[in-house]
Image (tube, rainbow over all chains, first blue to last red; front, top):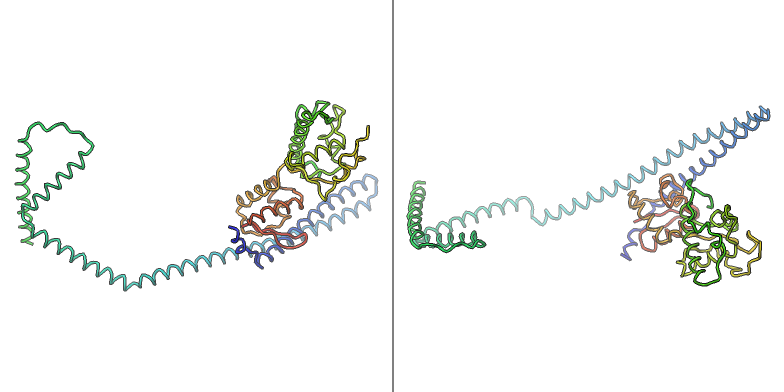
Length: 206
Length: 204
């Protein structure tokens, strides 16, 4: 943290903004002063009237009027100053936004360059497609070379695994008899053989 | 800065109506508890009326130091002793004399029947009902809350501006404010720039 302060240095723009804000503060103080003066003049006028000195009261009121006109003028100046300050500050914000956009665009471009352009992506996708197709072929070839018995064994194992996974937390009661599952197995094997035949036929037809 | 800004009356603690409270006791244990009671009272009184400093001898006339109903007041010598204790390490460094005022003549004998000023209690002292570090945190919190990080602010704006009217540090003495901002600058969280009366600060 210690050294990062140096990157937060006050810029020339900050100094200019400070000058404007100081000017604004001075106007504020000036207005405060004038307000006090006008209040006092009113008091003076009232006092003079009480004493019956009409001309003096009039003079005080004239002075007050003049001070009030000054007040209105400073109000306008103050508004101008504030608008200018706000504009400068907003411009600085805009500058920051622009800088952010520039950075983001540069990064995005750099990433695209690393990716090698649209053509490279298209080419890659094509190659990917080809590789996938090739892989499918290999799988089919491999699958075709397996005997029915092998397939059966593989699928039995899958079933066994599935059972294991689903029943892993359930303590099952002991199997009552050994015959029923055997018959079931036979049935299942028959079913599967039938399904495979149908599929093969379908493939041939296709 | 000795104007009282809080319209609500300050509720003095019951011991403020207890006559012996206005005479510092010689017994050391009694004196110690008396000093800390006075310290707490002065701090809460100044916090209530948002007094950042006390100017002597005029501050001796504050209801803080004299109970009209009781006809008692804390004598200047005793006030000086209390303030000296508050400024010590034991008192938590809550008081600090401006320009070394009030230092000279500490511990001089107190003249009987004399009340105001004649005992050399003149000058101005800060009363830190919040320490400079605490003030720094308050100001930083305000900057954070109002989204003014990175914005150039004038010191006048922070102390006297309309934007800080409801804040605790509003009306703070310029000198004290500069000191508080000095703490923030030291932490590397702000930078003070400009010259003369037109100082500005930018928080990071």
